[in-house]
Length: 324
Image 1 (cartoon, one colour):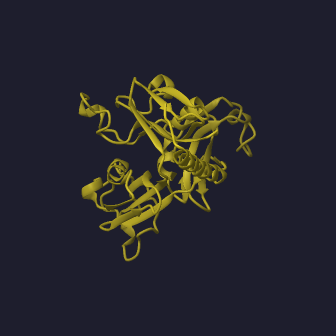
Image 2 (cartoon, one colour):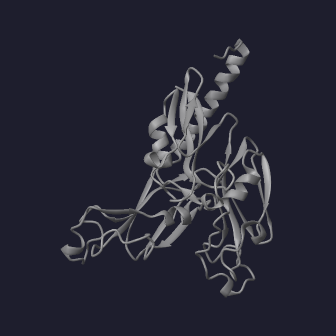
Image 3 (cartoon, helix red, strand yellow):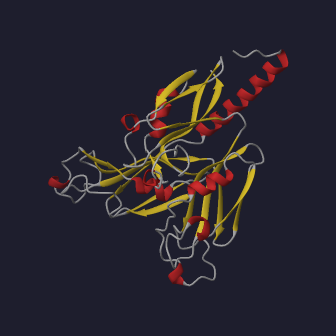
């Protein structure tokens, strides 16, 4: 139980009100977009302001009408066909625009003989961005609040960024992603008002030899008052807010984004994969906790599914306590 004098109560109420306005503004900016693209064509996602945050991405067929022109009924009649496409999350999150050739993008064919289409739901989140060419330093700064890294990639996803003076052969590979970029950037910057990160393969390893690379980062400036929780797999986390306030989820992930968290006593093979994300993390946590004064979530495959078999996972949640 907390007790406040009148000045403390006023400051507490003001802080909570500001956080409420921040979240309200965030929600006003994040109306969802849905893009449907027939198999084999190019899917285009873009944000006029902010950066892309993919909410769901599937390949399959749930309607006999979509992408059906010129197709025989045998290729459009199966409407119980769907598979998640993690590659869309990986390639588009944190970018202002993203183009994807959908041919062969799904991890496997969910229904042989059926003509499929890709359905991607995404929002545009008001994140800051930084792009630094190989060998340079990326400087991140928050005038108000603390840095929270959203996405990071050392590689190349287009032919124009950091291309000046470079031969064509160094720009052709636009499917170049560092497998461990998020972990070192998060470790260097999260929770700080400013930080710098060197864009070099000695920090991130070389994901595509012979390609000229750059470091692309998107990040939030979180106001003071954000709460966070980390709990290892098979354990439960409890989120709590003071009386008169309720939980508002900011972000969540069940998986693994670094090799040190929840690592005690675990073999290296269970810690090596650091780009592990359960696609339903935000949905599950929001469903169980949003608008409540307190809640409990189990970090388990039975709750979130298993996004990376053989990896020991953990659940990370960041949230605010806002006025009812």
